[in-house]
Image 1 (cartoon, rainbow, N blue to C red):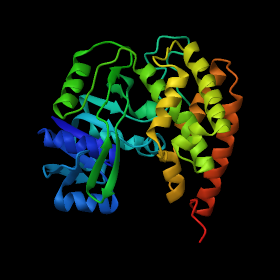
Image 2 (cartoon, rainbow, N blue to C red):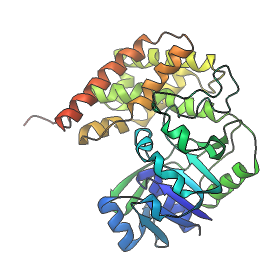
Image 3 (cartoon, rainbow, N blue to C red):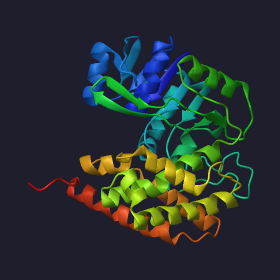
Length: 336
Protein backbone atom coordinates (compact mmCIF):
# COMPACT_ATOMS: atom_id res chain seq x y z
CA UNK A 1 0.00 0.00 0.00
CA UNK A 2 1.26 3.48 -0.88
CA UNK A 3 1.47 5.65 2.24
CA UNK A 4 2.73 9.21 2.52
CA UNK A 5 3.79 10.63 5.89
CA UNK A 6 3.44 14.40 5.71
CA UNK A 7 5.80 15.53 8.44
CA UNK A 8 8.40 12.84 9.17
CA UNK A 9 9.38 14.24 12.56
CA UNK A 10 9.31 12.22 15.77
CA UNK A 11 5.81 10.75 15.48
CA UNK A 12 5.66 10.80 11.69
CA UNK A 13 9.07 9.16 11.55
CA UNK A 14 7.98 6.50 14.03
CA UNK A 15 4.89 5.69 11.97
CA UNK A 16 6.80 5.78 8.69
CA UNK A 17 9.60 3.52 9.91
CA UNK A 18 7.21 0.96 11.37
CA UNK A 19 5.01 0.89 8.28
CA UNK A 20 8.02 0.58 5.98
CA UNK A 21 9.47 -2.23 8.10
CA UNK A 22 6.09 -3.96 7.77
CA UNK A 23 6.49 -3.93 3.99
CA UNK A 24 4.43 -0.91 2.96
CA UNK A 25 5.52 1.54 0.24
CA UNK A 26 6.27 4.64 2.31
CA UNK A 27 7.11 8.16 1.20
CA UNK A 28 8.33 10.60 3.87
CA UNK A 29 7.95 14.36 3.58
CA UNK A 30 10.88 15.85 5.49
CA UNK A 31 13.40 18.66 5.23
CA UNK A 32 16.91 19.78 6.12
CA UNK A 33 19.54 17.47 7.58
CA UNK A 34 16.85 14.94 8.54
CA UNK A 35 15.82 14.61 4.89
CA UNK A 36 19.43 14.34 3.72
CA UNK A 37 20.17 11.57 6.23
CA UNK A 38 17.07 9.58 5.26
CA UNK A 39 17.92 9.84 1.58
CA UNK A 40 21.48 8.68 2.21
CA UNK A 41 20.98 5.94 4.80
CA UNK A 42 17.27 5.25 5.27
CA UNK A 43 15.37 5.84 8.49
CA UNK A 44 16.68 4.27 11.69
CA UNK A 45 14.28 3.40 14.51
CA UNK A 46 15.50 2.80 18.07
CA UNK A 47 12.88 0.89 20.06
CA UNK A 48 12.11 1.34 23.78
CA UNK A 49 14.33 -1.64 24.62
CA UNK A 50 17.24 -0.26 22.58
CA UNK A 51 16.76 -2.57 19.59
CA UNK A 52 17.63 -0.84 16.33
CA UNK A 53 15.96 -1.27 12.93
CA UNK A 54 16.83 0.39 9.65
CA UNK A 55 14.04 1.12 7.16
CA UNK A 56 15.93 1.42 3.90
CA UNK A 57 12.96 0.95 1.60
CA UNK A 58 11.59 4.48 2.06
CA UNK A 59 11.35 7.38 -0.33
CA UNK A 60 11.97 10.86 1.00
CA UNK A 61 11.35 14.31 -0.42
CA UNK A 62 10.60 17.85 0.69
CA UNK A 63 8.03 18.38 -2.07
CA UNK A 64 4.54 16.91 -1.87
CA UNK A 65 4.23 17.23 -5.64
CA UNK A 66 6.99 14.63 -6.07
CA UNK A 67 5.31 11.96 -3.94
CA UNK A 68 2.52 11.02 -6.36
CA UNK A 69 -0.97 9.71 -5.62
CA UNK A 70 -1.29 7.75 -2.38
CA UNK A 71 -3.63 5.20 -0.83
CA UNK A 72 -3.22 6.70 2.64
CA UNK A 73 -1.92 10.14 3.64
CA UNK A 74 -0.96 10.57 7.30
CA UNK A 75 -0.84 14.20 8.41
CA UNK A 76 1.82 14.08 11.13
CA UNK A 77 2.60 17.79 11.33
CA UNK A 78 1.69 19.90 14.34
CA UNK A 79 -1.66 21.65 14.05
CA UNK A 80 -0.26 25.08 13.14
CA UNK A 81 1.94 23.55 10.43
CA UNK A 82 -0.88 21.97 8.41
CA UNK A 83 -2.64 25.06 7.04
CA UNK A 84 0.46 26.49 5.29
CA UNK A 85 0.81 23.35 3.15
CA UNK A 86 -2.91 22.65 2.70
CA UNK A 87 -3.06 23.74 -0.94
CA UNK A 88 -0.31 21.22 -1.78
CA UNK A 89 -2.12 18.23 -0.26
CA UNK A 90 -4.47 17.50 -3.21
CA UNK A 91 -1.42 16.45 -5.25
CA UNK A 92 -1.36 13.32 -3.06
CA UNK A 93 -5.02 12.45 -3.55
CA UNK A 94 -6.50 9.84 -5.83
CA UNK A 95 -10.23 9.07 -5.97
CA UNK A 96 -10.23 7.00 -2.75
CA UNK A 97 -7.22 8.35 -0.84
CA UNK A 98 -7.72 8.27 2.94
CA UNK A 99 -6.38 11.15 5.07
CA UNK A 100 -5.49 10.25 8.67
CA UNK A 101 -5.17 13.30 10.91
CA UNK A 102 -2.98 13.00 14.03
CA UNK A 103 -2.86 16.60 15.31
CA UNK A 104 -3.20 17.38 19.00
CA UNK A 105 -6.08 19.62 20.05
CA UNK A 106 -9.39 20.47 18.43
CA UNK A 107 -9.20 19.64 14.68
CA UNK A 108 -10.63 21.87 11.96
CA UNK A 109 -13.08 19.10 11.04
CA UNK A 110 -14.53 18.76 14.57
CA UNK A 111 -18.11 19.65 13.55
CA UNK A 112 -18.07 17.77 10.25
CA UNK A 113 -20.33 14.69 10.43
CA UNK A 114 -20.90 15.72 14.04
CA UNK A 115 -24.67 15.61 13.98
CA UNK A 116 -25.19 18.30 16.62
CA UNK A 117 -26.48 21.85 16.36
CA UNK A 118 -23.12 23.04 15.02
CA UNK A 119 -22.99 20.45 12.22
CA UNK A 120 -20.78 21.60 9.35
CA UNK A 121 -19.24 24.53 11.21
CA UNK A 122 -15.53 25.24 10.67
CA UNK A 123 -13.31 25.67 13.74
CA UNK A 124 -11.99 29.09 12.82
CA UNK A 125 -9.13 29.18 15.33
CA UNK A 126 -7.31 26.39 13.49
CA UNK A 127 -8.64 27.05 9.98
CA UNK A 128 -9.24 30.82 9.88
CA UNK A 129 -9.48 31.13 6.11
CA UNK A 130 -11.16 27.81 5.36
CA UNK A 131 -8.05 26.59 3.54
CA UNK A 132 -8.09 23.15 5.15
CA UNK A 133 -11.80 22.65 4.58
CA UNK A 134 -11.37 23.64 0.93
CA UNK A 135 -8.43 21.34 0.21
CA UNK A 136 -9.13 18.22 2.30
CA UNK A 137 -12.59 16.82 1.62
CA UNK A 138 -14.24 15.65 4.81
CA UNK A 139 -15.12 12.34 3.13
CA UNK A 140 -11.42 11.44 3.09
CA UNK A 141 -10.75 12.01 6.79
CA UNK A 142 -10.22 9.52 9.60
CA UNK A 143 -9.38 10.86 13.04
CA UNK A 144 -6.43 9.42 14.96
CA UNK A 145 -5.15 10.19 18.46
CA UNK A 146 -1.42 9.81 19.13
CA UNK A 147 -0.33 8.46 22.51
CA UNK A 148 3.31 7.36 21.97
CA UNK A 149 6.22 9.65 22.80
CA UNK A 150 9.20 9.75 20.46
CA UNK A 151 12.05 12.05 19.47
CA UNK A 152 14.45 12.70 16.63
CA UNK A 153 17.65 11.44 18.27
CA UNK A 154 19.76 12.58 15.31
CA UNK A 155 19.09 13.34 11.65
CA UNK A 156 17.56 10.19 10.18
CA UNK A 157 17.18 8.54 13.60
CA UNK A 158 13.91 8.18 15.54
CA UNK A 159 13.90 7.03 19.16
CA UNK A 160 10.68 5.62 20.62
CA UNK A 161 10.43 6.71 24.25
CA UNK A 162 7.26 4.87 25.17
CA UNK A 163 3.84 3.81 23.90
CA UNK A 164 2.34 2.30 20.76
CA UNK A 165 -1.35 3.28 20.82
CA UNK A 166 -2.95 5.02 17.81
CA UNK A 167 -6.76 4.71 18.08
CA UNK A 168 -8.65 5.69 14.92
CA UNK A 169 -12.24 6.46 14.06
CA UNK A 170 -14.65 7.65 11.40
CA UNK A 171 -16.02 11.13 12.03
CA UNK A 172 -19.57 9.77 12.11
CA UNK A 173 -18.64 6.86 14.39
CA UNK A 174 -19.34 4.16 11.80
CA UNK A 175 -17.26 0.98 11.54
CA UNK A 176 -16.52 1.29 7.84
CA UNK A 177 -14.42 -1.05 5.75
CA UNK A 178 -11.81 1.64 5.29
CA UNK A 179 -11.36 2.30 9.02
CA UNK A 180 -11.01 -1.46 9.54
CA UNK A 181 -8.39 -1.46 6.79
CA UNK A 182 -6.40 1.34 8.42
CA UNK A 183 -6.51 -0.24 11.87
CA UNK A 184 -5.32 -3.53 10.33
CA UNK A 185 -2.54 -1.63 8.55
CA UNK A 186 -1.41 -0.06 11.83
CA UNK A 187 -1.67 -3.37 13.68
CA UNK A 188 0.54 -5.03 11.06
CA UNK A 189 3.14 -2.32 11.80
CA UNK A 190 3.03 -3.21 15.52
CA UNK A 191 0.72 -0.48 16.81
CA UNK A 192 -2.34 -0.87 18.99
CA UNK A 193 -5.02 0.79 16.92
CA UNK A 194 -8.57 0.14 18.11
CA UNK A 195 -11.50 1.48 16.10
CA UNK A 196 -13.39 3.99 18.24
CA UNK A 197 -17.05 4.86 17.84
CA UNK A 198 -16.41 8.34 19.28
CA UNK A 199 -13.01 9.61 18.19
CA UNK A 200 -13.86 13.08 19.53
CA UNK A 201 -14.09 11.74 23.10
CA UNK A 202 -10.55 10.37 22.77
CA UNK A 203 -9.35 13.71 21.36
CA UNK A 204 -10.80 15.48 24.40
CA UNK A 205 -9.23 12.98 26.81
CA UNK A 206 -5.75 13.74 25.52
CA UNK A 207 -6.50 17.45 25.10
CA UNK A 208 -7.75 17.64 28.69
CA UNK A 209 -4.19 17.50 29.97
CA UNK A 210 -2.55 19.27 27.04
CA UNK A 211 -4.68 22.41 27.30
CA UNK A 212 -3.68 22.91 30.93
CA UNK A 213 -0.26 21.38 31.56
CA UNK A 214 1.36 22.52 28.30
CA UNK A 215 0.79 26.27 28.64
CA UNK A 216 1.39 26.26 32.41
CA UNK A 217 4.70 24.50 31.83
CA UNK A 218 5.66 26.97 29.10
CA UNK A 219 4.98 29.91 31.42
CA UNK A 220 6.60 28.46 34.55
CA UNK A 221 9.35 26.32 32.98
CA UNK A 222 8.22 23.47 35.19
CA UNK A 223 7.82 19.75 34.59
CA UNK A 224 4.59 17.79 34.93
CA UNK A 225 5.35 16.55 38.42
CA UNK A 226 6.30 20.08 39.53
CA UNK A 227 2.98 21.49 38.28
CA UNK A 228 0.96 18.71 39.89
CA UNK A 229 2.71 18.90 43.26
CA UNK A 230 2.64 22.69 43.61
CA UNK A 231 -0.81 23.45 45.07
CA UNK A 232 -1.44 26.69 43.17
CA UNK A 233 -0.63 25.32 39.72
CA UNK A 234 -2.40 22.03 40.45
CA UNK A 235 -5.52 24.04 41.29
CA UNK A 236 -5.12 26.20 38.16
CA UNK A 237 -4.81 23.11 35.96
CA UNK A 238 -7.88 21.58 37.60
CA UNK A 239 -9.94 24.75 37.02
CA UNK A 240 -8.90 24.87 33.34
CA UNK A 241 -9.79 21.20 32.96
CA UNK A 242 -13.16 21.74 34.65
CA UNK A 243 -14.01 24.51 32.19
CA UNK A 244 -12.99 22.30 29.26
CA UNK A 245 -15.01 19.37 30.61
CA UNK A 246 -18.12 21.55 30.79
CA UNK A 247 -17.67 22.49 27.12
CA UNK A 248 -17.13 18.90 26.07
CA UNK A 249 -20.15 17.71 28.04
CA UNK A 250 -22.34 20.31 26.30
CA UNK A 251 -21.10 18.92 22.97
CA UNK A 252 -22.11 15.39 23.96
CA UNK A 253 -18.73 14.08 25.12
CA UNK A 254 -18.30 12.06 28.30
CA UNK A 255 -14.87 11.47 29.87
CA UNK A 256 -14.00 7.88 30.77
CA UNK A 257 -11.63 8.91 33.58
CA UNK A 258 -12.08 11.39 36.41
CA UNK A 259 -10.34 14.75 36.55
CA UNK A 260 -8.26 13.75 39.57
CA UNK A 261 -7.21 10.52 37.88
CA UNK A 262 -6.10 12.48 34.81
CA UNK A 263 -4.00 14.82 36.97
CA UNK A 264 -2.57 11.87 38.89
CA UNK A 265 -1.57 10.28 35.59
CA UNK A 266 0.34 13.41 34.60
CA UNK A 267 2.04 13.51 37.99
CA UNK A 268 3.25 9.93 37.57
CA UNK A 269 5.06 10.90 34.36
CA UNK A 270 7.55 12.68 36.61
CA UNK A 271 10.20 15.22 35.59
CA UNK A 272 8.96 15.46 32.01
CA UNK A 273 9.04 18.69 30.04
CA UNK A 274 5.94 19.16 27.91
CA UNK A 275 6.36 19.60 24.15
CA UNK A 276 5.33 23.26 24.47
CA UNK A 277 8.05 23.94 27.03
CA UNK A 278 10.59 22.19 24.81
CA UNK A 279 9.50 24.37 21.89
CA UNK A 280 9.86 27.54 23.98
CA UNK A 281 13.37 26.50 25.05
CA UNK A 282 14.60 26.06 21.48
CA UNK A 283 12.69 28.98 19.96
CA UNK A 284 10.22 26.95 17.93
CA UNK A 285 6.62 28.03 17.22
CA UNK A 286 4.11 26.52 19.65
CA UNK A 287 0.75 24.85 18.93
CA UNK A 288 -1.21 27.05 21.32
CA UNK A 289 -4.28 27.70 19.15
CA UNK A 290 -5.35 24.09 18.58
CA UNK A 291 -4.68 23.18 22.21
CA UNK A 292 -6.14 26.23 23.93
CA UNK A 293 -7.53 28.85 21.54
CA UNK A 294 -9.90 26.40 19.86
CA UNK A 295 -11.25 25.34 23.26
CA UNK A 296 -12.07 28.98 23.98
CA UNK A 297 -13.86 29.18 20.60
CA UNK A 298 -15.96 26.15 21.52
CA UNK A 299 -16.62 27.75 24.89
CA UNK A 300 -18.07 30.80 23.17
CA UNK A 301 -20.22 28.58 20.93
CA UNK A 302 -21.62 26.70 23.90
CA UNK A 303 -21.92 29.85 26.05
CA UNK A 304 -19.48 28.43 28.60
CA UNK A 305 -17.34 30.89 30.60
CA UNK A 306 -13.62 30.02 30.48
CA UNK A 307 -11.90 32.62 32.69
CA UNK A 308 -8.95 30.42 33.72
CA UNK A 309 -8.31 29.17 30.19
CA UNK A 310 -8.64 32.73 28.83
CA UNK A 311 -6.05 34.12 31.25
CA UNK A 312 -3.44 31.42 30.58
CA UNK A 313 -4.06 31.64 26.82
CA UNK A 314 -3.49 35.42 26.84
CA UNK A 315 -0.16 35.05 28.64
CA UNK A 316 1.14 32.26 26.41
CA UNK A 317 0.05 34.04 23.22
CA UNK A 318 1.99 37.13 24.29
CA UNK A 319 5.02 35.02 25.17
CA UNK A 320 4.88 33.34 21.75
CA UNK A 321 4.50 36.73 20.02
CA UNK A 322 7.47 38.19 21.90
CA UNK A 323 9.72 35.23 21.14
CA UNK A 324 8.72 35.28 17.47
CA UNK A 325 9.37 39.02 17.11
CA UNK A 326 12.71 38.78 18.88
CA UNK A 327 13.60 35.52 17.12
CA UNK A 328 14.42 34.31 20.60
CA UNK A 329 14.12 31.37 22.94
CA UNK A 330 13.68 31.09 26.68
CA UNK A 331 15.32 28.56 28.95
CA UNK A 332 16.05 28.53 32.66
CA UNK A 333 19.73 27.96 33.32
CA UNK A 334 21.54 27.52 36.61
CA UNK A 335 23.65 30.40 37.87
CA UNK A 336 27.29 29.55 38.38
